Amino acid sequence: MSETPGSAVVEIKSRGTVTIDTAHCKGCDLCIPACPPRVLTMSTAVNHMGYRYPELHAGCTGCGACLYVCPDFVFEVYRFEQPVITTVTPGSAR
Image (cartoon, rainbow, N blue to C red):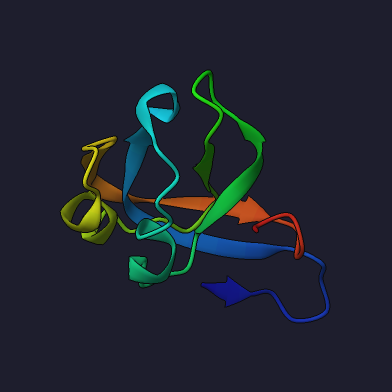
């Protein structure tokens, strides 16, 4: 992650990402502390089973830590061939 001096934007380099099957998540919360770049937060909304689920924010590296700790297998990891740079404003990244 790099911040441009004197500006209100942050560039985040991602080497991968994940998709989350929010419909099958049981809200165990194990993925949140397992995420090294800290880009997962629990939603305030609930799925059809009444459980809160993780939301992904910019900065995912595709490391797969969330996948390894998830007992419900709701994560799918994707790795990019070339890093993808995303520009976000501070405060909106999480």
